[in-house]
Length: 274
Ligand code: PGA
Image (tube, rainbow, N blue to C red; front, side, top):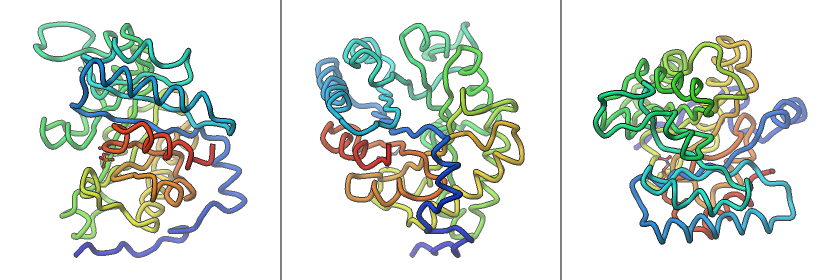
């Protein structure tokens, strides 16, 4: 049974007047991480449906980004509705070129039309052994190539149950987010590992507490840290998005499974305050 984190001062609180003013100055995002899914035809159709849906919205939209597998970037790029939706990738190598079989550099992603790249996703950290230093090097590569790095952090279930969530997040933020990062080149995504792909979503109190801690850490370490948008990821679905996206310090969502279905993904975009 998952221990519920003790609520911090702002935990679970929806945006109040001061927090609202700060939050309004940060850009909101809904980012789809397709992971290793999709065919050329299906990817083009999904991207077109998302771009059409975003284009049809009357309300202000958050920044919407789709991150298909590298082989599908070329199929997705022409479907994004003249800039309504941006293109992102799921990972990059730290070096611009060289003898790195199977890898793709940030410069190559930029040339393929990407403006964003996810780095340090927990699936990369655990399945590919990427540590904070490796993630930071990838984020620096993204910056070098002119891409916005979406730096993922998040504790495992064992770490949460041991009461180490705050310590783990602080270590990951300090180690993974490059010095000099700011709102123009970096987003941070809080993705508790135990909530990814499990259908087990963190409670609003847990998300609010983690985001407040990450926000404070970024603000203390980086001169531009307070302006960095903070996304939540981990089983975000249409039925929980509005509650999560209304929390103080939550500036958007990084969506895995639900981003593979246009209607579900667009419902999450619609749940964003804009
Ligand atoms: P999920 O994945 O929405 O399927 O939990 C989120 C992510 O891994 O970015």
